[in-house]
Image 1 (spheres, rainbow, N blue to C red):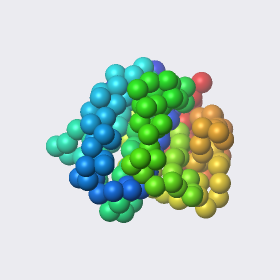
Image 2 (tube, rainbow, N blue to C red):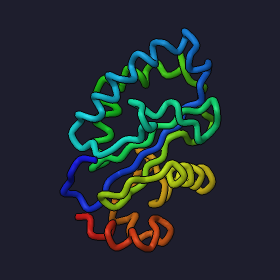
Image 3 (cartoon, rainbow, N blue to C red):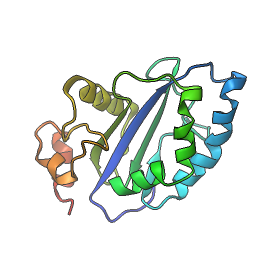
Image 4 (cartoon, rainbow, N blue to C red):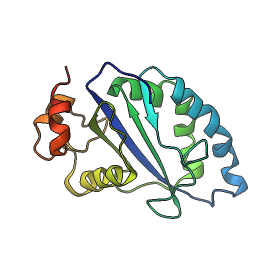
Length: 173
């Protein structure tokens, strides 16, 4: 995890349902993009942390949301840093081609939430935030780029963070 001067960081989870088995030749272009895109994320301004499977370079072997669902979980210093990586880098090419490899989701597949700096979210925590977004819609506890909240708004929301995290998130400028 990289050092940061921010009191709160933005966590993000996105899930993608595979259209083909991961070892299917039709998935090869996606698999070939993984290392360069992950390296770009790791080197991006504002990047803090990303989930990787132990002993691996990425998290594609983890399947906590189902055998045909891959997860991407990361933490960023700011929403702008994540936005810049997602939409102003080589990652955009992956997003443009996602229909080649992944099924269209009918419910939310991306969730954002604030965590205290230094907190590494668990996959369980991330999936719970996604479930909250799906069940209740955007809130300071679980939101999207289109319906975002500040760390201060999250800290003031009674369900946004656990009791131990509230004070740390509230100190965010």
